Image (cartoon, rainbow, N blue to C red; front, top):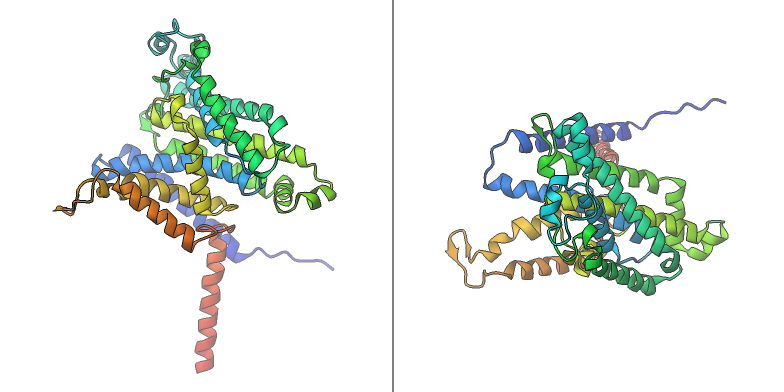
Length: 394
């Protein structure tokens, strides 16, 4: 007997809606970069969008490890640092090394990948392709560090794993500020003058806001594919019950290492994008507080939810850096308010986070994902129910 396979119309409509929304998003981002004039609104919106996209990738990479594999790691800031430095080191133009590495005789790395490609393909094409290559290198270097430290630490569990990975992040931060590595890392001094987001162009078309969204979306898409693969199912099995997973033939160490390395790779990519966004980086900024901030966003969005991490990232960045800024200004709609002073924004922000945690104990999305197909099914179901009620009434 032949079975006829019918496509789910709701899924088809949901996919079409998603594609249209993504296309509309990139059109808006393109207009922000190239057409719309700079004003107070766009000058606040563009940085929030850029940083929100970068933090989305960073939080999703952490969620892959903590939410989908059940490994409580607190070393994300260390992998961000490694990725940011790996990117910057290979993206500083050769003629700027003397200025950047002024205390270390011009540094040990005497070339720049974007600059080398720029001589062959043109400045803008070189900056675009060179930045992508440097971003991939950043991810690979971070993954290499993860593979090295994963051998001892992944045999630990729960709090012990968290303490070990947190210690790794602090050790890395100290090592990168060590003057003996100064010719490469510039010691405790900042790295600067590398290819930033503002240099990303195709011809005369600016892509400063489009670029981080493009990279983040590709990386998050790859993570989603991984989670929905057999490896992703193995990660979830380990998270739910390690003993049962091992009894089913899943190699615990192998899959933990795989999850740890992949998560670190995408964290390194996120660190590279963060370096491009900030235009300067310094190891002292990658403190444990950065890891706690990322973990907080993951918890707010929902542990085990990719879309939750993305939504929470934009909400967190917007609230922290834009929407609540008026609380530090000393006035509200021109009316002087005595307790609206520097730091009050952080107090209100902390209260909002507490409210979210209290009333959404599993986060905004819990362990569910945003689905346009599900929304279409619900709406069509309601319409069908209303039509049935109308028919019964007649």
